[in-house]
Image (cartoon, rainbow, N blue to C red; front, side, top):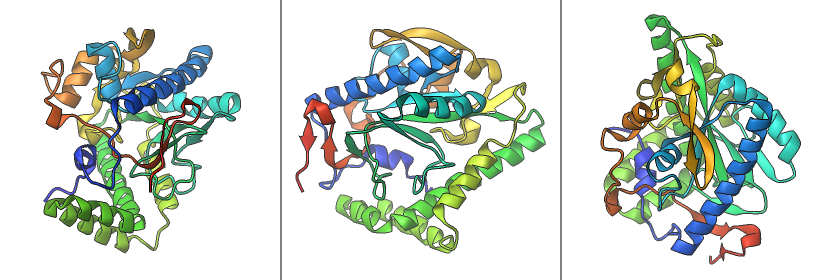
Length: 311
């Protein structure tokens, strides 16, 4: 039995979840575009490399905008650029945003980072213990990895192990709301997966989640060779082996229109998208296969006045 729950969370349906209506979705997309504008301002002013990633890159290339049903923005950023970006962004926009990172955000529980808009409330399954849950852009770090196949394999095994252990440890911390969510779906297979991950997480309960996340992040970034032939996004949707690229494919970029503005995408964008979504990535999936995040109340976009605070 595979214990991956990533895809399950993107298709889960339950009466405990909020299904955004078209107006809420469009307004959320506008807020996310505003966040992206501020991220790009810092990157462009300071020569920091970024690129749209995942479904955002797909929307940029295929639609030149958000995919109609998409409810998040992902960006990729090389480790050296990311380490410059975080303090610069906090200094410039700290009054407007939180920047949650694996290294310095208590109870973050993720091996990726998030830029979160203050004054909003967008609660996902990651946020059961997060008091700073708002509209966010995910930042995935592009890591150097080793040219030696042996060292690269060791790097891969460690990244996979830490990713799995962090997930299980977080499942144990969040076990009560997660099991309530799983049971509300009536999906026996999903319930079994959740129970197994919670049991594994219980074995790790002696170690704090924050410490495990920090160790995992350090392991992901252990290769400091900025001239390595290969780079990888170990926290991406296809994990280490599925997101391994030659440096020039991912760390060189091209500009494409996205929501009326030029944004950067991987230079080898067709290869990148085919790795993530298959060779037919230009064909939109049928409605039942479309991915959406799971949101919970309260949903509030602040000044836009769109709320859903029913208990």
